[in-house]
Image 1 (cartoon, helix red, strand yellow):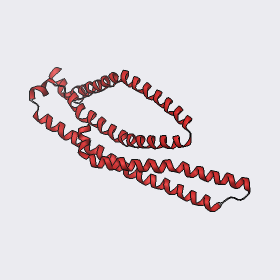
Image 2 (tube, helix red, strand yellow; image 1 turned 90 degrees about the horizontal axis):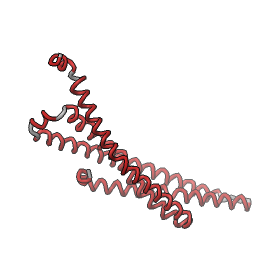
Image 3 (cartoon, one colour; image 1 turned 30 degrees about the vertical axis):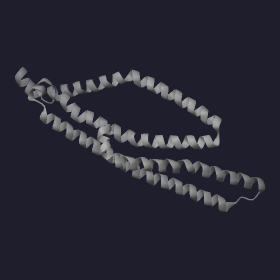
Image 4 (tube, helix red, strand yellow; image 1 turned 90 degrees about the vertical axis):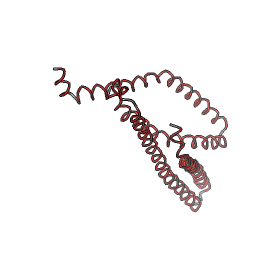
Length: 212
């Protein structure tokens, strides 16, 4: 999959750049809201709220939110385009591979299993890339920028979050390690189901004609 995605590395790099800017805009908004809250609190204490400064910070926060939304839209367009192109290239290569296979191999394999590889497996890869690639890129950028901002705000709280996050990652790795075999078994069972449906139910009249 990485080899397929490498064909669109320039688009991928541009999508990563957009994700960095999107995360930067999202991270800067809470700081502006914090400054706005400080101004309002100071104004309530002194009896004179600086409405101009509050309005200026509010407009700036709105602009950052708007910019983050627009950048996110274009980033999703790019990542979806990469996912669809990778899925299309994967199907083309599988079709070329199928044309080069000897008939003896096709005769020994269930038609439903072969159809499952074309339909189900390629769709699974394409959907997984489409759903996870954008989230992964944005998550890495947002996590890095949030860590920087958290260190600037409170070091002890940041260390606490990092420790708990590391524990969650370790637990996830352990769970994935023991559940991966069930996912492979699920895909194998899906191929068997496609084979049964294709050869028995879709071709029921032919089976009844030759098998009584």
